[in-house]
Image 1 (cartoon, rainbow, N blue to C red):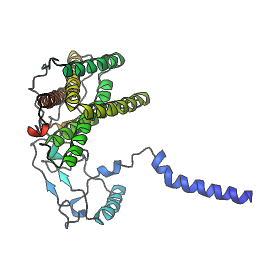
Image 2 (cartoon, one colour; image 1 turned 90 degrees about the horizontal axis):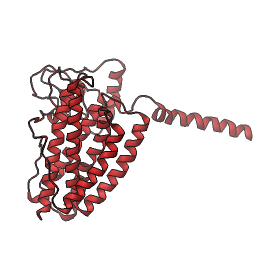
Image 3 (tube, rainbow, N blue to C red; image 1 turned 90 degrees about the vertical axis):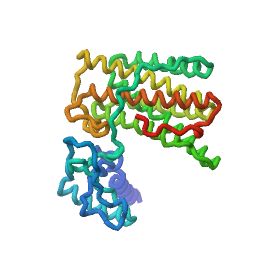
Image 4 (cartoon, helix red, strand yellow; image 1 turned 120 degrees about the vertical axis):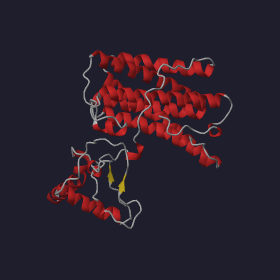
Length: 332
């Protein structure tokens, strides 16, 4: 009887290891293979989304990798068989020079040239109690962060972006629920806030190409994001104008942080390495761009987020709802 139990236990263990082993112990992400571009000839033409798109973008030399053959081709065939059952297949996207588009985290029409002429020194002076509370909260959060990271700018930027992408998502989510609950339009603010969250996430996708966080930094991100997400969620439920003002001041501190980052790069205290390929495509930067150029456009993005959130708070402090004023969608 014990022998039968032993044999049965071994078979169950082998089955579990076979099924769950690749998921939990594989060193390669199971999502990595999704970035492969499907060839036009393999896209079912009876679907609209499967139509090959050739997008006219800025005329410049873009670097990319064409789909490989062999094993990747076999994986493409398997993926096509699954997706085409539902009539869905990712389009084959190309750049202006005809080369394949290799990014799945954003698409060519989402790329843009950042407006770096924006005034980075603007500051909303706290006058009302709402402003003073928001400003005090941000100042209280600032000093421990600066003490922890000091001159480790890239480490600071990675943590900063994991937090900065939260307010837009929370605000957009709650406005979305409000729009459904009240059967009313949002004036475009849902899209504007989600656009902000996505832009902040792309900042993170850029920096992780430069630096991979250590385990203790990942643990810190996990803890900080968990606390901040829930705290901001409750703050937005209680007072959206306070929540937007807090975000406006957070973005002001982000601008200051990136200014210090840029100053150290210009002084030569940090190596000005080549810009990541994802940053070149996302901000339509020249091919010879460096980290200095990337920090400059990210700082401009943060300044725009600063203005958008202070503007949203001003609207609500004036006794109005956001839907009464058209949202600055695409405000870069």
